[in-house]
Amino acid sequence: MKDGPNIAAIAAMVGDPARANMLTALLNGAALTATELALEANVTKQTASSHLAKLTAGGLIAVEAQGRHKYYRLADADVAGLLETLMGVAARAKALRTRPGPKEPAMRHARVCYDHLAGELGVQLFDAFLKNKWMLPGPEKTYALTKLGRIKVQTFGVDIDDIEKGARPLCRSCLDWSVRRHHLAGALGAAILDEIFERKWATQRRSSRVLEFTNVGEAGLKRVFAFDAPPASP
Amino acid sequence: MKDGPNIAAIAAMVGDPARANMLTALLNGAALTATELALEANVTKQTASSHLAKLTAGGLIAVEAQGRHKYYRLADADVAGLLETLMGVAARAKALRTRPGPKEPAMRHARVCYDHLAGELGVQLFDAFLKNKWMLPGPEKTYALTKLGRIKVQTFGVDIDDIEKGARPLCRSCLDWSVRRHHLAGALGAAILDEIFERKWATQRRSSRVLEFTNVGEAGLKRVFAFDAPPASP
DNA sequence: CTCATGGTTCGACGTTAATCGTACTATGAA
DNA sequence: TTCATAGTACGATTAACGTCGAACCATGAG
Image (cartoon, rainbow over all chains, first blue to last red; front, side, top):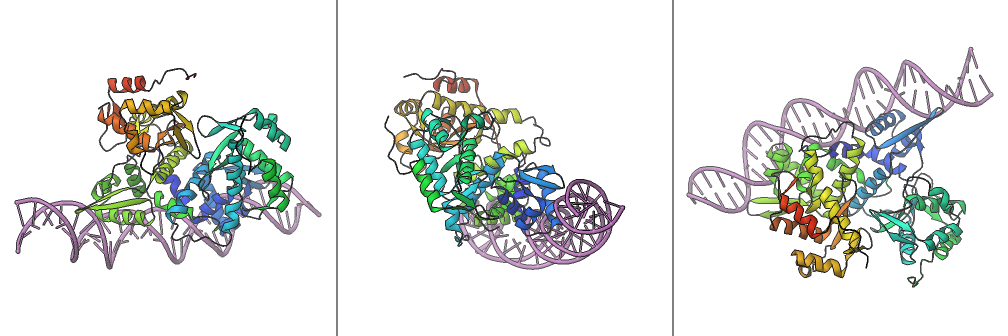
């Protein structure tokens, strides 16, 4: 019974609706203050404070004090991955009870996962990178950027030399709970989403993970990364 | 707050210690009866019955009646993956509280994950398949078996044509919570473990996930799959 | 300094849910 | 048929925990 780490403890953390709401709210990657999280979970500040204390003690979230604010964020990408995995199981396991709400289509089309693009567009972006041989599979869930890929993202506006310095893997796959396929994560995935915001191709719906792409934005993304192109044949 | 599938519900399922124990017990892939699971969780039959009803209703486990027994097993490989992911997070998040027990080293070295080999040996096996180009990365977490790989596993004793008929993906990666790298899952991973048992290279420690390899068994595994070979260069 | 605001602590309330004892049904063996 | 065993149903008890009101610290603005 005590064979491994006690998964019950951390599962119980996510098991409370209020805390689950907070965690999913943090999935967009942005750090939020305690009151913002309280609003997100529909509880008062007091209860939110208690929940946040437990989550930090449990190692699921990290906190950074700035002035009189406290910014909370997910502890690391692993926790984000856990949440997405949970969504994957929940989406299928309780499919009977969870009928797709009105916002669901937009959610499936494009949303933020932690700090990168997810949903149909995210999956198509990931496929495009593979199809055009801009990256090649590596160990674990990582991928190696090819020379072609390097040029591609540089011309798109990503300062690849800069983000490459960090310890975070450049290209990484992340399972998409809605489409149940992989999308592009890692430092590059984050940088591309940054550039999308920079170009005002999309905006994030308030206190939601839904991404609202403009017409030119979506068309631009598909054009730049050649979503509909046939496989490269070098 | 109601943006996606309700992850809180299923997280809460795993959040109860008794249920978590049952689920981890089922991780070895074998189907267990209700009383066995009750023992595993240190509860009476009555409570176990209640828990099992909830887990089946939640879609986490599946049940099959055989005579006056009811055999429970994990609903699918996704649930197994979720549990391993949970262990991965728990192992690091609560590293301070979970000091490695005496059984831990054996657990890290070789154990059963659902129905395939995990631990250090499992990771080395996975690496060997990649290094020797026996399989190549495919979509999602799947991998495609190459011709070389096909011959290799056939000579090892796996009836590849037979297991290929099933809907289950042949090669799949599964995150290892102890080593924090990938090991080989999927139908092939299960078949290889079967063959290992068949050859009596290893036995499963009673009511545990630990695999006890014999000396010849471990040596044989490393020899057959060329754990220490340099990368293939065709 | 004074005041407003973000966040925490404490205590009490109420709901939930895990647990088990007892009683019951169903399957299989003798 | 009779008995033993696997599993379930129901009800009562108990413990845990989420929740909020009120009071309390800390930071920053005027």
